[in-house]
Structure formats: structure tokens, C-alpha cells
Amino acid sequence: MSLAALWWAVIFSGFYHGLNPGMGWPLAVSAALMERRPLVMVKALAMLALGHFLAMIGILLPFSLMIFLVERETEIRLVAGFVVVAMGVYLLINRKHPRILARVHPARLVLWSFLAAMAHGAGLMLVPIYLGICGLLEPGNVAASGHAAAQVLMSNDIVTAFFVAAVHTLAMTTAGASVAVIVYHWLGLKFISKSWFNLDVVWAVSLIIVGGFGIWSALGSH
Image 1: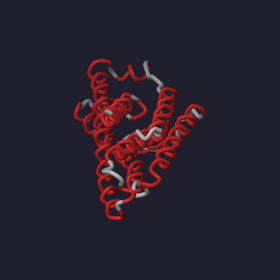
Image 2 (image 1 turned 60 degrees about the vertical axis):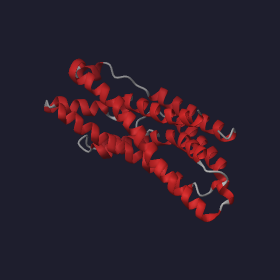
Image 3 (image 1 turned 30 degrees about the horizontal axis):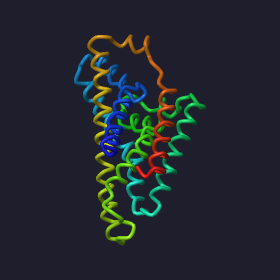
């Protein structure tokens, strides 16, 4: 049940990221409306998904390569949890959006999505969840099984990192695409300008909650 809960956390965090306009679905809607072709929105969503996936992998891969330090697994998970909490506190204090995002042309959606996910700490949200999944998948006492077993474990965790990023990105894209289709076909671009909803505070609090969950799971060996 703990493993299932962690995978559901990966999926729901993806849905949450997808619903957040800060992850880019309004750009896909505006691109399709300007060119008056629905297929443009599909292309834009695919580019946003690729950028988001690369950002998730960029955060998770270093941790997958650190898993050979199995003797320090709890400490690594604790540090990761504290980093996520710190990011959430920082975003609560600093409400300004990174200026670098305004300097990236909307046509470069892969780069924009990658930078947006990085700047908002989207990948950090997955770290405690990912480390929890790796901990539950560990086959026995690998700390005492030698360097070869550690290499096998590391390889498995790299695959897990890609799978976590892929599942999360699929959920994110599904949620974002659903909102984009509704806005494009029924609500129109004016809905975005008149009804823009700011999730900055909710985003920051969610990072703190996820980071706290990571700390709790590490201390409780969940």
C-alpha cells in the first residue's frame, strides 16, 4: 500500500502541475487560437511535455546515481525533504516570477517548459516520492552485498527515475491538455485574461507538505 500511495503521489502531482497555468497550457491555447488550427495546440502541448520531462529527469537522475550510497540513504532522503521545504518557504516569501522566463520566446516551448519547471521547483516535489519508491524497491540488505549489487541497484534506480518522470509528465500533460481543450473550444482566450488564477501560494504550500512527507517517511523508514 505504501508503494501504491507513492505512485499515486507521482500521478496526482502530475495532474496538479498540469492544471497550474504556470506550467504553460495557456501558451498552447493562445498558439492554436492565433493560427486557428487545433493541431497547433497538440504540437505545443507535446513540446511543453518534453520540456517538463527533461526538467524532471534533470532533477531525479543525480539522485538515482547517488543511490549507491545506500548506507546514507536516510540522510539523503532527509536532506532532499528539507530542500523541498526550503524551496516552498522561499516561494512563499518571494512571490516574483523569475525574469528569465520572460526572456524566452514563446515559440521555444521546450526550453520555456524546462526552465519553468526548474524555476518553480516542480522536479524537487518528486524527489522525496522517488526516493521513497527506491527504498521500497530495494532487494534486501544491499549495503552488505558489495559493489556489484550496488551497481545493479543504481541501474534499476535510473530506470525508475525515467519511469517516475514519464508517469508524472503523462499525468501533467493529460491535465493541462484537458484544460487547454476546454478553453480553446468553449471558453476562449478572454477567459485566460479575465479569469487567470494564481496558484503561487498553493504551489509553495504543496512543496512544504511534500517535503515534510519526505522527512516523515525517511524518519519512519516508509
